[in-house]
Length: 150
Image (cartoon, rainbow, N blue to C red; front, side, top):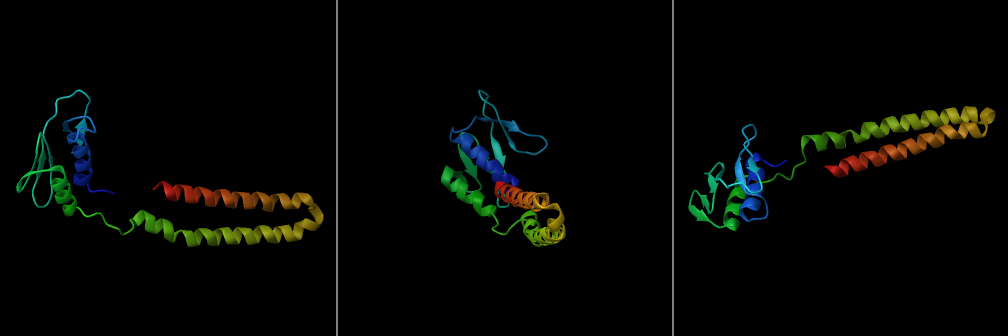
């Protein structure tokens, strides 16, 4: 997740370069820039620990007027993006082992029931493990799909 000033800078940079609608204000609840087509552009201030960057017709930083590349480098240096996994990803990865343990126990139970019932039920006895295997495949596919959406 990006820090709020870095996310705001990305929006303001696109607006300043003309690739997005102009910044017409600041959201009162989250302090992110508000964009509107056809609106009059207003200055927006990106707060950083080493000084504010004001984006108007020109970009002014603590050391004076900056071009877009210099402002981008300055702001990104204040908010380095961490390469460490977030708590959510860590917990999600840690939950894989218990999940597979439960699936393995379920599979052993199904195979035990199949072993004892296959003699009396014949083909009907095979329907339950087949459905179980299909549910495992669908569950794992859903887990990987959800993991890749992050």
